[in-house]
Image 1 (cartoon, rainbow, N blue to C red):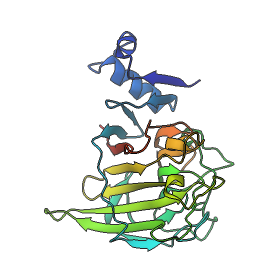
Image 2 (image 1 turned 135 degrees about the vertical axis):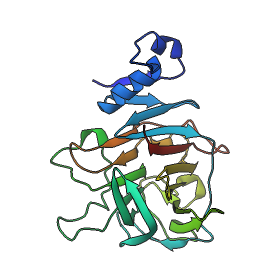
Image 3 (image 1 turned 60 degrees about the vertical axis):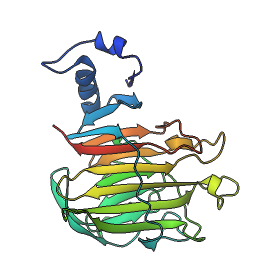
Length: 270
């Protein structure tokens, strides 16, 4: 059974129940998300909790690094980078990681790529993080920003980029950007109207994860618009492990140009 909770009708949700000092909406969200039974229709006030994390929408922000970052995965299809240095220790589901890999298919893999068993970094078929099983897992710890069957044609700045930046307090953040990634099978994939641009930001110390979407609209009527064929969420990669899935094969935004897409922050909770 899967429950869909629409935050636009809080009066209905508030009549359900209360746990302790939590509001009915918060309590219901926590229980269903923790059980992996929740699909949440996101609005400006939406949030979900589970796996020791809370994910919520926040004001749009996008730090474009396509002119300053290190580019890779040009002309890539179902490809992954090698092991890259994160630049600081990043704690993810209780484990510190110093290295990461970028998949052309819209997700980050944390840790060092194992020689055996074979890596699933290049997996093109996105998975439901709430339903991993022996046939598709383990996949390793991942941050799925927009996990779909994406490709880069290598024209201009059409590729993945990464860059470590530092704020005025000396705290670092890693930015990974999928710049003008195309959806195979759509005509004119090299054109801006047939590509998407989004990024993931990992923050030192707070260990927050920011997913920001500059453009997730492929073309009018396209089945992949706004994450309709993608996975968005985080997982430790194991079958019975921890995870928090924002969406799976369902649109997480009503974006259409010239609007920008949403910004979602994952942080440790409680």
